[in-house]
Image (cartoon, one colour):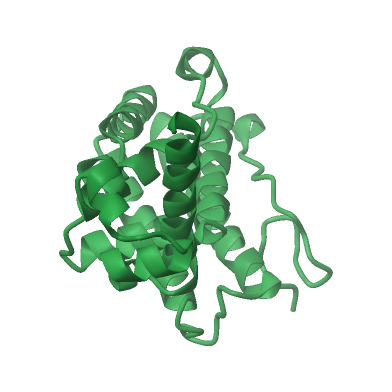
Length: 230
């Protein structure tokens, strides 16, 4: 019996993930999940207490929002200014790549933005606290109060572009679903970090030997600073 229950729970949890990925979070329902899993819906109530309990168990086991390797703030405290910006830039780009490839995480975030009822563990509190801590610590390193504003702007931008790509929509001719569009977005992110670096470097009156060189993946028509060659 325990084995049968474990198998049934697993089938139901897998059905939840399939529906979220293929049809969207808003399509979740007791009947739809039971039909997808090929299991009597009564067992959802018996094993999970209802839909919310099933969703919470799904999120506990699947974790659509995996945590990226953390920034080594202690190392960055003694690093040159350009390495701090380099590390922060690549961290954000890694977040963007992860999010754009995680359909289930996109659906959960979209549901939250639309005010739908989602389990509290959809976005782990510890993960959010860590991200805010990193943002504040980076601000201290750079001696600026603008880190939260930079983070809010960049995270909002990549979230909107990614969610728009679900509808196969481009923005100003940039298609986030294509490799070209994704490379353009990443190049712009690096350009924003470069501009912020130059601003802070100028404020600190550092000499030109500390010039920031963002690790840009060049295309044939781009220069080393990510600008299109004329």
